[in-house]
Length: 435
Image (tube, rainbow, N blue to C red; front, side, top):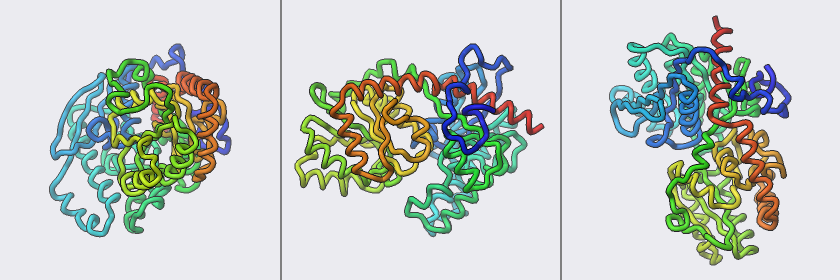
């Protein structure tokens, strides 16, 4: 298959646009019955990119007329049913015998594997109950989280695994026990091996899982998509009043991600120091969980010592609507990650038409072409980011031009319905090949 629907291979420069469907080319096949397993699902468990993907994907599929049922996590014990935008949602949290059984893992600092085992069992239990009343053409789940571990093994239903951030590729970046890394990778591998269809959000990750995890091909590259209408409507949020960002004559650089080393938060202190000292009108803004205390224990005290903290705003974790509203008011979006697949933070900044300075790691170069729809800096090099930020700050035409082109890129390649339709074509092809 050509373009972004193709199997993995050495060519990462193939154009995406030619492979994505427009409205006239969409499949006329009957609607599918699609289940989505994702512990992460906004708003209750919308922790990161996997939850954001599942939310956009479910809504996109529903817009195309497919019957979509999401099985998500809950923060409180029990089973809960709801509906939004034509999508049915079942949330579940199972406690009891399994929670006690995996206590030994928690005692050995195996928090990731414990979470994945409990998540996998909850998804299996909820879907098994649903299958008593309804049938599904296919069930999609992320490899990360173990959502499909038991489903793909014990239930007679076709499955599609979507690669986002496999533990085997990223867990070494965290303070984790060896036993936890091995168990987590094993749990994820079980669901991967049993899947009927395998997809990846980027060619980069498709290549990585094929070569480093020996995942069977084909691995279809199906990018992430989003709903552009959400970026064009008024969220009703007064950003200057609610968040204190500058209204006139100021320029704001925005970081919206978890404040952790994999997202490059350790590089930000030097960026703030050099940029803020050189440009008195510039502000930095941060949104995201400060899981490891980088903001409160390192960045803010350092800025206090240098009389710069008054131009650095930290908002904590925000809702998606709040992030969208802020994106419309800032000038430059910053993504200094050390490892990324195809981050929604980047796609959302592109949809908002913002100037972007991003790492050249992972799948980001598939989204950002240097000096065309953003700028790429050298991975894990604070000085490279500082130089790119200075260019963006000093060149208003560059900000406007790259931001406008970023928006056009999303319109052409990454709409929620376009990606949902592409997903359905991959599902159908995979199911046909499995017969």
